[in-house]
Length: 559
Image (cartoon, rainbow, N blue to C red; front, top):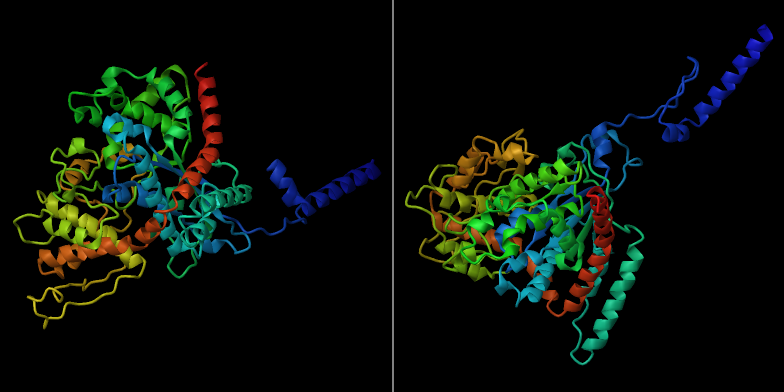
């Protein structure tokens, strides 16, 4: 009996010893830690916080832009800048060693919503050219971002490394005689690059980030100090035309089966659409919902003008899920610190390409990204302020000047962050009558984080944002609730209520911000073949994910 117990104890000791030596490989498969005797200890492994694990997962952002006209500041601040410049940050990154630190991947889907432009027939005739122009601007903005962050960010556009695309567009422009031959060579070269880089990222991953929004934020919201090195990451941009994926219209028709006319009568496009309303305009939210459900993003980036459409889409999702459970689910809305509606330079109507919202069709109230320096200066000079002659932010019934200050501090913030803005004080001995010397520079340069209220929680959910009791007050007066008004007004105080100097600095900030973008945009003028190749490759990249999601939805709908 004693001899048998000794054999049994020896057997268990050998088993436990084997488990100790292979504990890491076994724990990955079983996720269970075996019970060990007190004299056996597990090999020491440093504990990793949950937030660190969440920040390593892939995350998908989604936005759409209508190519119905030239891209303006409202499009840029509301949608394009957030999705292009959002980057991953890691909480408590010092807890991890460099050996264990992995590259974070962010998927960014930018939909060229050409089907949404068909709500107005006049857009059809110039739609192709506007699609090409919009893609050129978007890629130029991505290049601008990459040039600033290339030390720690790798960028891919439709599975092609951006450095390879830059080699194509930075070559000498082809001669007219050899134009066709070189275009074919460029297309072949682009296809070779695409096939080579696709092995790194064959399709968009469906992994979602955890619930902690602080893991993925704007660069301005990083939780680590500036002394720490930024986190290595890869940004995968997917740019494609909505009309190239036929599943958008297929799912759009299925959603219309659950959509009532009374529900659609409430959205803003119907109220502003006049008498001749098309069915395409009427069912605008249904197509928008189809765009989102096909790619199942983690976060959705939209402007404030789309909040009403989001409420209709939430009603549609509830109705669909009432008949068939767990079919439609909207992603979280990604809000930035600059999430305030950009108005026209008159401060009353939103900056929009839609002429239905601007009966006078006066483009002098809209600043486009490609406007030259003189055009921007003239538009800002003519912008409406008020008769108070007091340059202060956050007061009621002063939405015109509040709107200009919102635009000013958006570009001022990024100018500080990029360390390109030089602090110069105005010389008191200068002659005010001299136009060349009537130039002011900000006399207060603060850390960019001081512009915002400390510990201000960005609203992650649509209900939290719209149900805020002060939301209507902020919206009516064009006030950004995230701004630290004390610091803002201290900076504005340096102008001594001189509106002309303030407007001049604003025009310079806007112009300087897009210098690099304009340079690369001009380089695409003779390379439309490259834009077409990028769009075709984008269609191939996203079609697999869209078809998979469409099959899942059809199966759940019993079709």
